[in-house]
Image 1 (cartoon, rainbow, N blue to C red):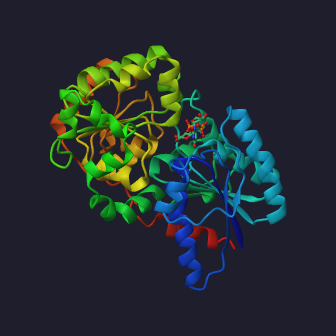
Image 2 (image 1 turned 180 degrees about the vertical axis):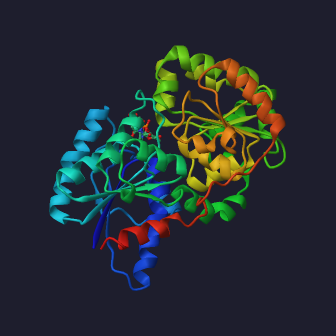
Length: 392
Ligand code: UD1
């Protein structure tokens, strides 16, 4: 049986790594699942793509479609055109897509238009917010999928409510946690100050150091509390009247109290520059600006943070399993299982400064609380391979 997996953007890489490794062990035990890995090229910077392939030990993609950046239609359209040719050449039995990025949706559309079987890893997530490009990707992909591999009971239930037949739904757990468990120990051994030193956006900032910045350079990240921040969703970074108050709150209130370590997404940096906010950000002493960091490095920063502020879906899940209090800078989440009301560590604060202030105060006093939903056990990829092999 021949399987073609399609990945395109950073959050896909953490999800495909365990699957690739589980396929290899299945074959080492006598199985015969042929695998072709396709990278659409949606993310292409070394620090957004290749560094993850290296760190997660993913073999080089067999095929790189090199679609690059662009509008949603351009990305999806270019991916479909290139992938259709690849599929016609390779004729796989199954196409496997992961997550909810444009590569996921494009892969699903090509698979079904070519009458191939389609499996979706991380199926059933719903934010019920159609303004999110990812929600559209999820709904299209799930509607087309033959095998819907869900991470939790809420996702399986979402699919049932939409009328997906039971026999297509298979709750396998969260594949991201396979990657987390595989790298947890190595990440824990990393020195946080070294991670920061190696990834600073302005390595020579020390020379410009005014006394408050000196405070950061003498700071003991291993022992003293710091916050971590990630931000990239269009709903937070595409409008100045949203991004400016959010940034000013972080700079004036959180960064005044503890260092805020911030690996900046290329999209966010670009928006800050367009809105004339970049100078203000780089002048803020309490912000520790990093380039996008590698997988283990981010895991280390998340493990050590007193509080995480993020609009990333994956980080909400990782914070849960690591016990890090998480302020989710979104109005909705497709991962409700990570919320405090379900036992997790995440609180939805949208982009309201009032709600951030309140949740930040509570997060500091609440401390760490570990939560592991059923089947978030590091063994999800094996269950997925078994499910696919069972169809052959
Ligand atoms: C995409 C996903 C999002 C995911 C995020 C993680 C979709 C719809 N969105 O959003 O779900 O959470 O990836 O990062 O698929 N850029 C670079 N170098 C790169 C990649 C991007 O500089 O390697 C810049 C480009 O200016 C680009 C912008 O970032 O236009 C946005 O990239 P894009 O892939 O369109 O979306 P993300 O915001 O990364």
